[in-house]
Each structure stands twice: as structure tokens, then as C-alpha cells.
Image (cartoon, rainbow, N blue to C red; front, top):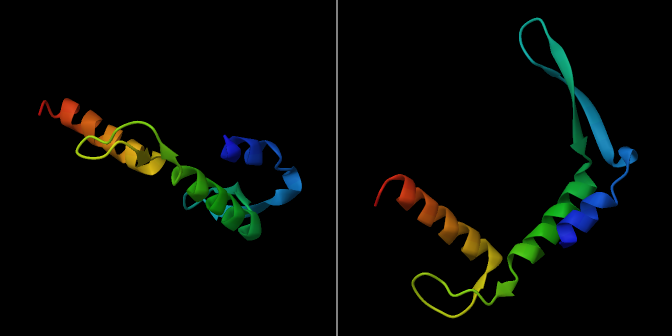
Length: 84
């Protein structure tokens, strides 16, 4: 939730526009969050993903971080798709 609220506070001046080659004959523009805010957003998101939640891990434990939950759910989806 903190990451979403962080993104809602961003303004147009927080972004940098750069020209990039799309093909040999075409150039397009791409917007990037400036370096300072990118580092800050990464810090906010990492803090969020390291929070401990009350969902048991697949193999061990009663609690896990959100990051671990995402990794385990991804593993379970891959196993399902491979019919394991």
C-alpha cells in the first residue's frame, strides 16, 4: 500500500524524458523516474516486501515475508502449468 500511495504523490517534474531509438529509422521518447526518486521508491518497495505476514510457508514456518510468499506462489503456478 505504501508503494501505491508513494506513486500517487509523483508529479510530472519527477520524471526525465529521453529519446531512444525504436528502430533504424524511428526515435521515440521514454519517461523515467529521476534517479533520486527511483532509489527512494526501491527503498519503500523493499521495506514493504520484507514485511512479515501471517500466511504459512509451503515447507516450514508459520510466518513469511511478502517477497517469500510471491516466490512460493510463483513456484506453485509453474508446477501447476507443468502438471507436476
